[in-house]
Length: 142
Image 1 (tube, rainbow, N blue to C red):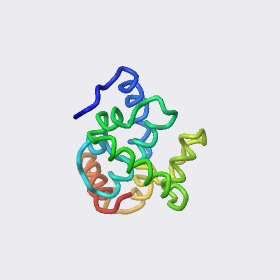
Image 2: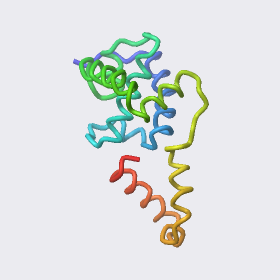
Image 3: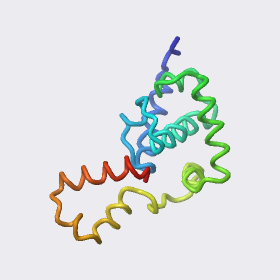
Image 4: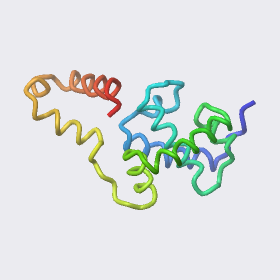
């Protein structure tokens, strides 16, 4: 049974979701889907951790907000805590939500800058560049 979603929960999701999406270069629909792609799972764990930070929301409500349940939220938070000790991406996100300035090292902007140095990428029209970036991220977990 899904938990009731409160106004506070909606507000917190609206504040946290864009931050996570920008940081992990994924879309809101990706994070809120049931996708099992690694880059989306990482972003989903980070979102659930971020929503739980501060203890304002119950795990059941966070589950309802993120298309899961309380046990998936608990699992995400535990994974985030474990991986934030060793994994660079998790460490970087944790530092960011704790107030450190945003670093573009692994962002879509940085990826675009790197790809602009290649002749193949530069010859593509804008729409094809967007498709190229999306496919690159999906296949490489950038």
